[in-house]
Length: 194
Image (cartoon, rainbow, N blue to C red):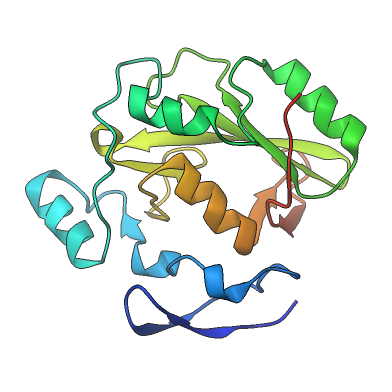
């Protein structure tokens, strides 16, 4: 791994990353720095929040506002075409597949098990023989997506699930085991479908 000093092509500003890039990836296809889009969960709201996001270079999602309990029709259509989307698989099938594969960085996105309309999807990632199930939350009427549980002061926001996955294919995703507290980093390296 290396510590990059890259030029963010979309914003024209230098970005400083606090984690190494994933090895073997083409830096030319790098997405904009998430720091340019990190917003306080408390400080984002209404028209002013949308204006703040736009001033930081974020474009609103093209998908319509999602119906409760599912991703929007436009978002679902873009997910179905992805090699990492397991639209009809449950948690058990996804975990079994990832554990059989035994490759750190293997991942898939599946529908969430619970009935949470604000958390319609889950990112499942394998690291050191353990599957991490990370909620993907839909925020601001479906205009943004974020990883993990609610309650963080600052979080990275993405205009779509596809953009989120593309970002973490190039930038390490921090993973924390809730039981042991152990930490690890991995990029999303091996798209997997059960």
